[in-house]
Image (cartoon, rainbow, N blue to C red; front, side, top):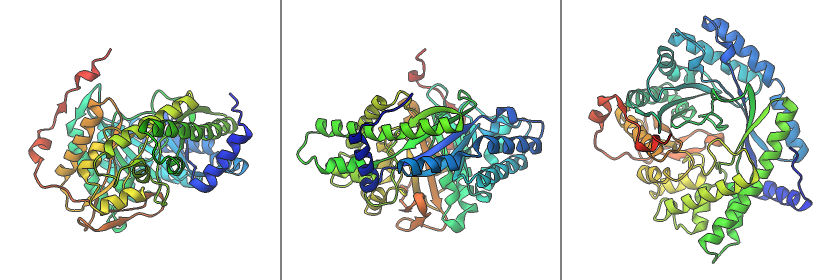
Length: 455
């Protein structure tokens, strides 16, 4: 498939890049590692390293060549692999830690920003290997720089594995403790999912699902600044007109990502997978989903009307992207990470954006509770209860939701955590009192809802 761009489209693209922070947020190569599984961790690690280096040897340079050719910034180059829990049978915690080091070393050698897939899918229960991998997550994330982890604990078809939810509260707490000198940054590389998708190019939740090809290129585009600029010129327009303008802008953004993805996959000789059209903000002023919502007419993001405005934005982005590409996938919509969005962080610091309002907004956006700092003394049971609430939203609404939450060590409400780069900074949000300990200790599995019985 060849995409033809008119001179008008090219000029529009140049303006979006130069003036409004349009970028390709990530090109992510998915790699199937199932054939690397061997009888022990060392042999498996050798095969993993060899395959990643073989397939991704030119990934960084080819992405750079395309960036220079078209002048389109490619912010991150990433790899997603088969869920690592599937690669070892009888495995110990130490065996998985060894594989984490192998993955981190291979990513460093290939000059890859992040590698996702240190993952387990446990929505109906654990295998011994999956339990061992989950137990290893705090050490793995504290001992590596590029490895990202995810655990899927719920789905609309399976319900919610509350034993896994209870365990993840402890894992998140321990991960924060082991990276306390950096404000608990290990938790920024860990997400807990409901209805995780197999082709997500964004970290920390990317992995290469079992239904994916041998190798694939998935692209994540962004462009909150482009959408914001469109809305600058729409004073007095109706909400229907606003939605239409957002849809048209999303179409243009998607076309750029489609071109990059197809050309990169051709250069590398692998399948072009999907285009994730999520509006992924950055800490840069003007590149904020919060500012888009305020331009739509919300006085302060988090205030009345925020959820409705976000729902409209999310829907318009999906419609525009779906018209521009036949292979829209991943998460696709609008992200609302607090630390990664300067407007969200500001609203949280001012008290407009609370944990409860963020949870409500996740019912209509792409992901979930994302990059939220909470007090370091929050108990594992309370963290698990927050996870359970978010998993319920995903399960009941047949959508992907995730939790990437940071119990900031030695910090409380009003303090700030600072991670730098795309991860940004955020105020520590207060947690309401009241214990859910008995609820979490019950364990078991919350059954799948009627929505899952759709065969």
